[in-house]
Image (cartoon, rainbow, N blue to C red; front, top):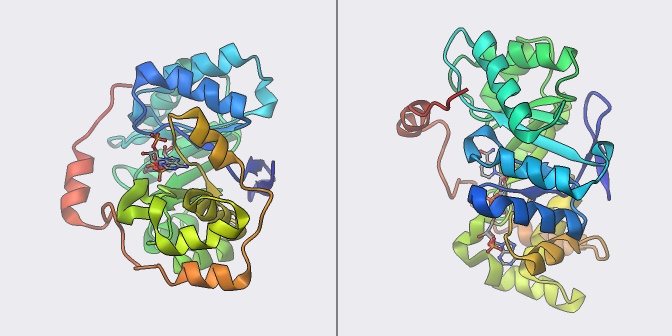
Length: 283
Ligand code: NAP
């Protein structure tokens, strides 16, 4: 598996498996299928409610721990967040049945962000998490976090797909050594991504689907991607993207699809800030 090297030297697979919106009762089977298909990076979150099922699948797979790269995420914590965030991490580790996670992400840029980050820095120093990062940080918030803290996030996981390409975000992240990770790489199928004529046409001579073209395009941009699927066939298809390449011209054709706007929601929209900030998880 092709990997990227994070800013603290940790190797991360460039392609993994996301479990958002997989109901807990289906998650163990989905993760078992994904591991059987060859995925070694698993992306979950406390807020997805399926960490326990991910943990069961890991345990039953008997794959050595060091061959896996497991990410989970910290949900919004009230101030002072140090104790709350620490408890949240301990809960996640217990649910996952793991002594450490490879990457711990702050899920949203809200709440006691600085307290949360300090708790994550401490957990990193103790080896409970091999790398720490963030999700859903726009460039202004990301730069503020980088400039005013000790540890620079290893990763920023943000909505990134052909219709919202995040090229200026990626430039800033490159400049500061933050790895760009895509969520919603398929835009969850919005804008008819899976049958999009440009993507389909690019894939046809390679005998690849629009989905495979999108994953290849992300990988060629050095973006870590974590497609979600509950279908073993689609999991296998999504994993089979290392035997072809897109030309500069094809990469340029996909660049044209960028609308520069979210297809989901803007984390800077006050209504979204208020809506997401209301949610609290039990630690
Ligand atoms: P996604 O990967 O863009 O799209 C998933 C959808 O695509 C599912 O409906 C899936 O259906 C379908 N699909 C998958 N492979 C396909 C293929 N080859 N052909 C046709 N359809 C296919 O959406 P996502 O789950 O939102 O994003 C991926 C991961 O990113 C998540 O699972 C999660 O780990 C992470 N994420 C993080 C955040 C954050 O705030 N940090 C937010 C959203 C997501 P089937 O399951 O039926 O195959």
